Image (cartoon, rainbow, N blue to C red):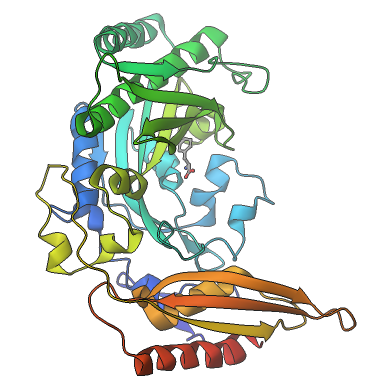
Length: 410
Ligand code: PHE
């Protein structure tokens, strides 16, 4: 049963029917990997910060936010699926864990920052496998400027500087048109200013991609770094784009970005400015640059992991031998009102923590006569640090089964 209050980061919150945050998740809130000197996530943060030296570098904002900050302040529609309890962690109906660093855009713009980077842990209910973890780290970057001639002129000069710099780099860019009918400028913007913001955004990020990926992968005239821009959609930017980088034989999705919706800036009392923002996932990029094969490793306190890294330097991770995996299956009839797969994933996480490497649906079945649904899950157990014995895995699985019955009423 859920307690009537839960303590989180030194504050006690009442619970209600929205509460779905688990002890496993609460235990992550104070880890702050992005501030742990020498940790790959922290090194990646500082490399990006060094690439934007005249931006404010923020990294201590609390993960506890309101749905207003996370969604409404960014003009998410009332029925957006991200708001649901199955996708996000709620402490109660009025407070939640941020699902993205964009949750702080209005606060940071309101505080008067015009050029800033913000690094933080973000939380999403999700599947369990080598590349999904319910906590990960994002960096938000933004740059807003006045629309008077002098301010726009300064952005145009920076565009020229970046163009000169990129012309001398071994980079090949597949661009999309800045503004199209399906990716429009905002009605309140002078289309010329919108175009300038989009160009400055693209050049700033191409330059960052070159710094990060050409440094590790190498880039030559014959084998330039390839960056691809794609039209995208976000509720809080227009036009919007995604950036992909071709690295070791694959196109990788790196970030989302766009021209900030003017309503966001109006809410921040900087209605006379416009500009761009991006958000990138640090684990994704770190896994690629450091060759780290499993996202759980970032949370490891094992010296065989931590001692491999030096602050400020990207190096290739040398995997130590994996301990054996052990899987257990469980299948059950769904209760009448059904349950979401994410409820099962969170339950397994809560029982097994990082010992659950992977949870997969292996079968779904509807009884032809009764129309009842059954689902079968396979839980793969593996420790990063030791061999699990059968008795231990059985005990974990027994707990999973009894909590499925008690908590989810299967
Ligand atoms: N917050 C978005 C995400 O998490 C990324 C984004 C940030 C997109 C800023 C546009 C502008 O996917």
